[in-house]
Image (tube, rainbow, N blue to C red):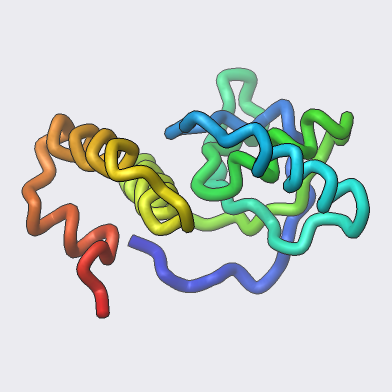
Length: 137
């Protein structure tokens, strides 16, 4: 899995981004994200990995930042600042799950659902711990 942060931020077309691991959002928190971005701008770029689209043009898989992406869509933006990482589809999915698990205010049932997704993809408990950092101190 890639662990280095890219050195530059790229403007990525929003309509070329596919969300791998969508989750339900708290609407109050989402509205705060939208208002914050409207007022002061985006403080942290989203993270994507580039793939070739069906039309041959670059397409992107969202790794982290679905709330920010949805806020940009709601605000009518066509592009969003993104860190473009070079990772496999599998690692992108795992990084996305790890981001969801690590966020503040997560519900235990959401964590369980994410872990069940990984188990369904034949990951062992040790794989999940190692790749997500769930037990990191």
